[in-house]
Length: 394
Image (cartoon, rainbow, N blue to C red; front, side, top):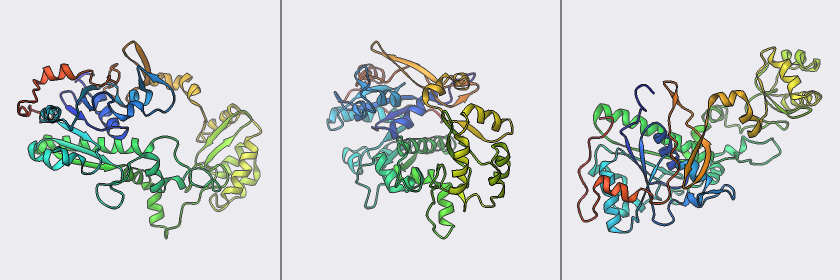
């Protein structure tokens, strides 16, 4: 990268746990920031033992490794005055602090948003909650599935007779992490202009509601009609036939927006050409298409449809995706190692000046960098916090 990574010189303290906050810190690290993860001694971030499967690498869950690579770990018991003083000293040097404490906890420790911004006016304080910091849900657990349940998104997935269907990954967490990242970057730009820090806030619920802005706007301006999922091969509650995923003779095919008269000709299904409303007659139309596409293989249909510029794709699983030339050309997998154990994970999706950010550094062991960081920053719990360093992006 000709000019270095764009966030080099930025110091970030990741005081968050689980997924959303640490994911935002990970993305900052991939862009060049130095990220120090503050963890409780011994057990560390709860995410270390939050398993997606029974696979562990170096004693930690694969989930933890994926979200916390390329960081340093500083072990501190925030209820211990000496440890808290050391963390305060690090905060005084930091450009960004990310936290997701439950409401009131940071304030009781003296490191809440208002206190930190009063002491460090150039600091970017970034926080994620479950459902906002006030109101009847504020003190409830901020968890991805619960946020999905509250948000309405489950009524967009599956088909009409399925009941609510959750998205099959931690989408609220990931979206909230990305939203927080956007706010942090915007606040850093403003700080470069005005010299002022900022408080950046989001929540799982806000992020997943924003994720639905396209279809929710339709609902809000369409007499409040609820979404209508197709009974046959639903893929989008607000889009007409043929939009959906169809079984073929040997797999599945995704078919996007396509004029029905054109599709009728290409798949030799004359009955489609007479359909005038692909939404009102959606289930019947999709039933006809499904029966026809099941007669030939995915490859045969792909050859016929792509030759006529129809928007379609084979439905791939992960092994097929990763064996494909298209994916291999993207070069999105990285191997990181720690304590003799290696882990394959994804790289940053962003390329700047033709190069991806990130490094080969794995997620740290709990407190692996505590001693080195104490020495580097001259930390001494008996002393007051050192003055802030000149920050990056001044």
